[in-house]
Length: 193
Image 1 (tube, one colour):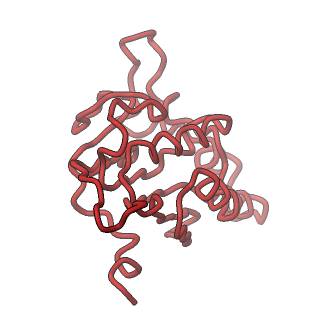
Image 2 (tube, one colour):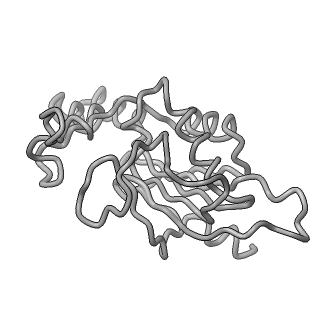
Image 3 (cartoon, one colour):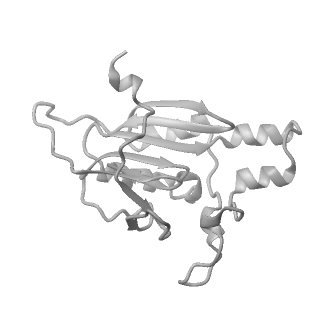
């Protein structure tokens, strides 16, 4: 297979960490559905466990915003929990109700980054890590393809997680591709290059 297929799930080399919280290593603080970047300026995007934190009513708008800031043919790498897998584990009695709540609804207040309060408004930081959207492979594919991404591939990853790779549509004129300048990532939020 060509390198594009072999490397489609790789994610090294991202140099711009974006998050809605001013956590260590975050370069740009912003909402994930309103990125402060010009159209087509990024060459790749990795969103690791980001979309489940966005309202199910806004995930389409969010992915379309990511597509907006990416150049033609840019790779997209997205990780989300597989809610159907986790719920099935709970229904089979493999995990407790408390563990199902932890993994399905999020919050993860036990993690240092999610302890304390937001200085603006005083909300507990874990509330920003709560899950507002469930995904399974079919719903994730439907979302990504519906937002214009192509060559969507989805695989199961570790325990009840999904990893999707896709690309923005190729340039209309492949002989003269536009110049792109950076990569961003929401790692346990978002990153791009």
